[in-house]
Image (cartoon, rainbow, N blue to C red; front, side, top):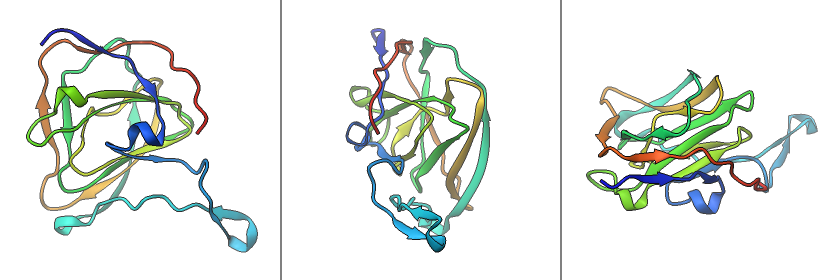
Length: 171
């Protein structure tokens, strides 16, 4: 493979739609709950129950990666979605791709997430394991079941995420 750089783009719902959902309350209506002390904003439902799955909530304690970063592999979960929510505002990168049997390198994209929102990868979307830009904790909601649901595909050398600042984007 010829060396290819991925410049992370700001995360927007429109740009990320092919890969999953952006988890944020910004620009979403909600309803008053808890005697008016809170507003409940519904998010798209995670897809966790197929093939006897059940929700699993954990915290990943992530160490910051150094950029530029070479993308060597992507993983996917064929039986359920996976959600990453930064705790404490930790920014992170998301590298994703579409593809049936293997990642389609023509669809690989990188997004910079500013730490004020999270992402849900749709079932079957190829993605890189967590790439935190600072040390921090992430709440992870995913499917757990008797059937293992993590498939890993190696990429040819040369795919790199470049360290460039992304312009600020309103949520």
